[in-house]
Image (cartoon, rainbow, N blue to C red):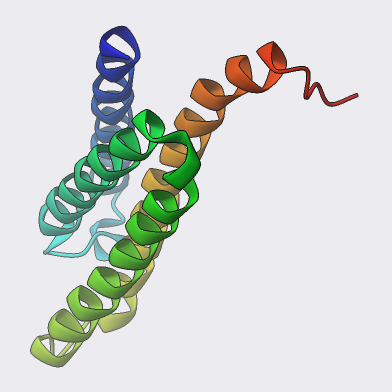
Length: 135
């Protein structure tokens, strides 16, 4: 698990680099209105929530019988925290709420998709070892 844990953090850094390049490209191409002033708050929030989710699901991987509880718990925490974060910022912001929400949703799905991909790559070898191969 130690080796794959490093892969998770490398993946988070890679996603952050892609978001940085996208933000830089938008600003340089004359489209800074598509980047929320709170863009880096969104990235920081997304990374913290991804690491917390990773920690919870890693605990679940060590307890195979209860893995689904840990995974569903981490996804529930992620979703509720996202709603609180969005609500707080949308109530705080007086303008560019749409840009903020779109920036947030893109980051939310990117980090959530990465976490699910990471979990699938860790669970697939165990599934194949137990004879549960998909066609």
